[in-house]
Amino acid sequence: MVKACKLVGRSRATQHRQGNPKPRVHGPWPKAQHPAELSPAERAKILAVLNRQDYADLSPTQVYVRELDEGRYWCSQRTMYRVLAEAKMGGERRRQATHPPRKIPELMATKPCDVWSWDISKMRGPAKGIWYHAYVVLDIFSRYVVGWRIERIEDGQLAADLVQEIVADTGGNPPGYLHADGGAAMTSKALASLLVDMDITRSHNRPRTSNDNPFSEAQFKTMKYVPDYPERFASVNEARTWMEGFITYYNHEHRHSGIGHHTPASVHLGTAAAVHEQRQATLDQAYGKHPERFARRPAAPPLPVKAAINDPAQRA
Image (tube, rainbow, N blue to C red; front, top):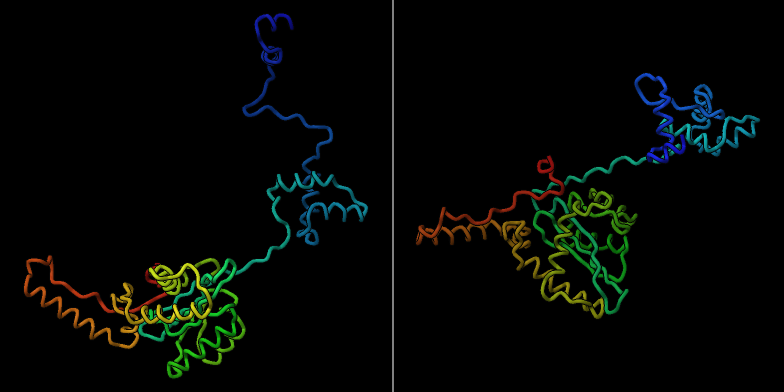
């Protein structure tokens, strides 16, 4: 038989299997049971031991040695793992800490001083590793920077002092909400205590969600992309001098697309309506002279009506 199979190039195993077929029903060939294999009843007992209430959060190794200490042997440690895997219980057995989902901040401002947003951004110092920190607080409705400071460190007390100074400068008129991300300075005890005393509701981003603070992020981007923003600042005083000029420009000259191309100061101080009327009068005059140059009657950009962080209507 061996010589014959070799002569025709046929496997001996194939010849033996096809020459001695085993009768079977539909389905795969039955697996031969190893003499040492556990029976289904033994597997059920092992699974019951592993799932005992006092063992439910212990690893199979811990269960194995504890059962040995009690004078009982069920199977090897590896077999315990296999039994759990076959029962689809092979994951983490310990109780895991769970955290409730962070609430999405939903803030709405329909006028100045409803919601303030603030953040801290780094500014490069004179050498590598030296940073200055710009604290900037703005009104989300008008985009007006109500206060700022530049320091060498991030600190909750410095932030609290800044907020207190801004409220004093505005005649003791605090906002309804102060929104920020979850940084150490933003969640500091000093700032939290001040906000409670001033009856200001604090709001924070969800972790790793910068879009929850879009107004401060956009303001910092505008700041760092102006043509004269330095690569580095020679000193903290130079950074403060530059920042003072930029904030004056941003508040009083920069036409912001998010507020109908008005300046933040115009919206914040209530002169935007008059500017809007003047713009519309100019457009009406131009339309009256040459209507053929317009597809429709031109309209000045509308005045802002609201500003929102995670507007529920838009999210829906």
